[in-house]
Length: 353
Ligand SMILES: [Fe+2]
Image 1: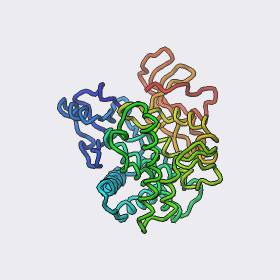
Image 2: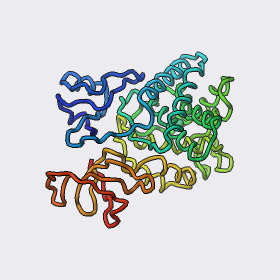
Image 3: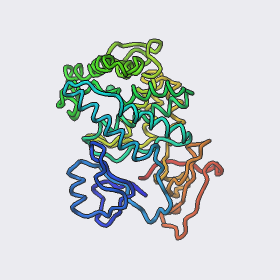
Image 4: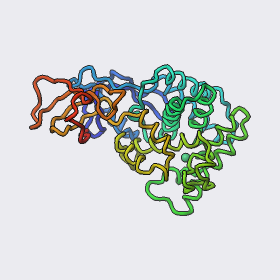
């Protein structure tokens, strides 16, 4: 399969993955053949692109971190919590708590899975799918830290609810493209304190999870908000969620921003290590994401171009490549596979798609 931007999508192409509405419902299922009316509809919904089946890349499956079913349910459940809180109702933890447990189960059972490229999602659904992704990445980091079931639940719950305070921030500030004024920024930053207040009032939410909402924008050297805490006073769960939050925000496609590729986001996070992000969590993030995910097209220092077909667990920057084009850019009649872990003189120089 391969990712196609909506502008390049043609009728006749077949979906390799389902497309979700903002509330987590499936809009179009995998296998559906594109028609002009569908493409127009997707464009109208602000969907940036889709995964299609690619006959040139047989057998290349982009692995999913958690099942579509768990993801869809979790997205719908967190949306329901946001909707209740927005209209001032109390919320029940049952369903969203179940979703966090399902996410933990899948990750614990599949310890070698890596965070995949962000899902295809509409811009409107950003907050909800972002909340689910932050939960998934945080739980993966928690597993690497050796947390037990109870700790993973407290972490995962704090992660999926970390931005609940945004329900109290006016919509025009939340969705404003470009820079916020100082005044708008001050209101936006209050989502942390609002989140803490909302979660603290619910007796089913552990206090350590509520602290995630309060502290996820604090930074090691005290440059964060709302209280400017330094590393020694920021709780471990919040340190994890702040890294997961930044990574997912950087790699997500949004109305005013094209998503970065994993290796670009990792490079930036590494550069900000110690100032913006806790160094030990950043090192764990390297173990949870693939710099060059399966399905992405890369150029080697030999100028040959190929597609990543498998990740080497020991050396993630040296995956298995199916070479499709020779060094002169000529399409090969027959593909061949190259294990970069065993071919030390070759390396990836750039991602071409
Ligand atoms: Fe936030």
